[in-house]
Structures are given as structure tokens and as C-alpha cells.
Length: 425
Ligand code: DSN
Image 1 (cartoon, rainbow, N blue to C red):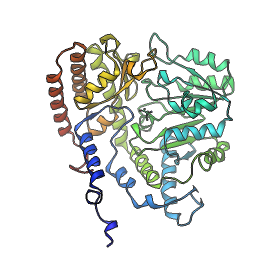
Image 2 (cartoon, rainbow, N blue to C red):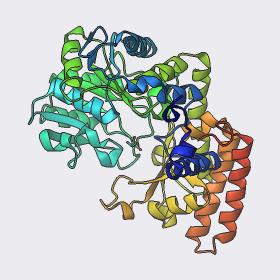
Image 3 (tube, rainbow, N blue to C red):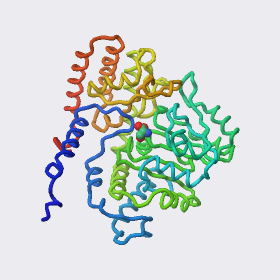
Image 4 (cartoon, helix red, strand yellow):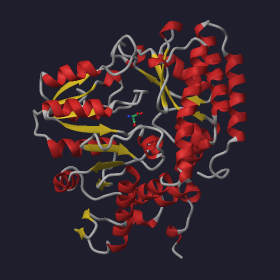
């Protein structure tokens, strides 16, 4: 056998193998609270590393630009069929390399440069690819945005309606990265109908909760739904587009290929099929419900310790902690948690300055911890650990003792809930 085909990476590239090993060890020994992360199954990892990665194809199953595609066509068709069944819609495109690529393809499908779009502001928890100024979507389209009400942090549907009637957008977008509440899809549908706009829901963050019936579905209200297979859906990194109107099919498919992408990542398509299949199992519904219950427990624990969460709670896996009452910035809070083996990310709170260093929030998510097996008791404990760390920073105390105590508690929890087979990269 040619050693090229069976030498493990630890021998062929020890430098990179060491990096991979250290990252695997970091993940195994830390509590992951970044809301866009999760821990995928071994089956998803197997698909990502399978020989299917060697195959090049462009086009769609049954209509490819390269030969030898009949078997991989089965993988893509399986992913498409599972996506349709899981989310209850007529059509799916599983080729987008990411959620942003999926959104770009929707823009290419529906809009001309200069057309008007109304989307959720980045500062209110929206997403870059929905028209933020530094993103291509913000440079090429005329983007207006709606936000949240200052008094309760919830989406301002009245302002959304007013804004929709004034610039009359061609497309209204909702969904994002840091909004903790279930979005009122029927109301936005109504607004879209009033002004003749199409309605896109980007459910990247909460797709797994929709799949697990722990969150309302954007269908039948949305014209098009995009998502990632990462995050709560617990699959590989990549995007999906879903819709019901057959008139859109040719346009969406050609906006993905050849409109904005070339050949596809077949290992990722295979892994998408795996995670979609997993999400069809009854156990996935238990997981999805537990994700939300855990987020509510974490929110309640932090609130009881004097750390308000925006909107007073959550309907999803996400919570946004407002650190202003304690005089902390998100940057410092994130770094101190990381020192204690708890991973999170700083986040802006509506009204914060643009500079990330000055943001006063931290975003936390419960999907990865839930996949690991943590329940409400563990998340109550984690909330207490977080508050202990932040309290000591806020009080200006010597933190060394609190950090090492928390590291120990985190290590104990991680050992009780192990992930991949020990030592596996
Ligand atoms: N949008 C980024 C996040 O939510 O963290 C990446 O998915």
C-alpha cells in the first residue's frame, strides 16, 4: 500500500496534528456557550472525512457537468429529500457553502443592485449578510433596518410596518444571530403582503429548534427560508435554502449554481444529509426542548444573581446578558470566562457604541452544552459559576482563587459528560 493513503496525520504532519489535538482537548475540557456552536455526532464527522470529498461536480443531481456522479447524486438527493421532509416544504437547495452564501443566492434570485430591502438591524441581533454596511449586501442594495423597542428589547413590529410602507422594500428579512425571542412570522407576512414584498426568514440560529418542534416554523409564512446546518441543527458548516413556490425553483437553483458558486463540497453535503436524518429522530425533539429549557434556566440563574438578560428571558437557545449594571464590558467578561474554561462571546447591546471593545453584553447559547448532556441542573450550576467569575471582576477582587475554583468545577462537569472517544482529534 502506498503510505500516502494510510499514514495518520500524527506521522505525516505532526505540526498540524498537534494543533488539532490541542483544539480537541480544549473543546473536551471547556464549557462551550457560543450560541453558534454545537458538538456534531461522530456520524457527521465520518461523513466530513469520507472519500466523497475527492469528487468534483457542478450542477444538480441528474444534470451534472462532470462524469462519475451517479452515486454522489444519491447523497445530494437524500439531503434534499430530508430537508424538505424535516421542514415541511416543497423544495430545497443544499449546496450553499454557508448561511451567508445562501442569503446571497436569495438576493441574486430576487433583486437587482439598488433594490430596496428591509431587514433586522445588526445592532438588534440581525446578521451581516442581511444588508450590513461592510457586507456586499449592504454595498449593493438599498437597505433599511428595523430594530428592537428600547423599553423591552423586543422587536418593534410597529416600526417595521411603518418602515415597510415608506421605502416599500422588495424584500423583508427577519432572523439573525443575537435575538433571543421567537419572531412573529404571521405579522411580518401580513406587512409583506400590505406592501407587496417577498418575505425571507433566516433561521440559521434556530433551525434545530424548528426541526425539533421547540420553536414556531417560518413556513407557511415565509416565501423563502435560509439556514445553516451548524448551530442548533448540529451539523456541518454550510447553508440550505427552502421554499414552496415552484416559480422560484429554477431562479434559486441557478442563483446558487452558476450564479454565485461553482463546484460543491460533497463531503459537507453528505454530512448535511446525516444531520438532517438525525434531526428527524424523536430524540432530536427531546434535545431541542432541553436546549430551550436550559437557556431559560441559565437566564433565570443569571438574573437572580443581578445580571439582567435582554427581554427578560429567552424562547430559544440564545440569551444576551447586559453587563452595564455591573459596570463591565463584554470584552473583559468574555476573557475572564475563557480563563475559567468557559467560552462565550462579547456582543453589542442595543444602543452600544460601534467599537467591540466598548460593547456591554455577552451572548450565551445552550446548544453545545445540551448536546453534551447537560440538563437544567448543570446549567443552573454553570450560571452560578459565571456569576462568581463576573462578580469578582466587578468587585475588583483578586480573581486567581475564583478562576482556579471555576476551572476545577468546569473540569469536573466536563469529565462527567465526555464527548468524543478519549484522545480522538
Ligand atoms: N453569525 C455568527 C454567529 O452567530 O456567531 C456565525 O454564525
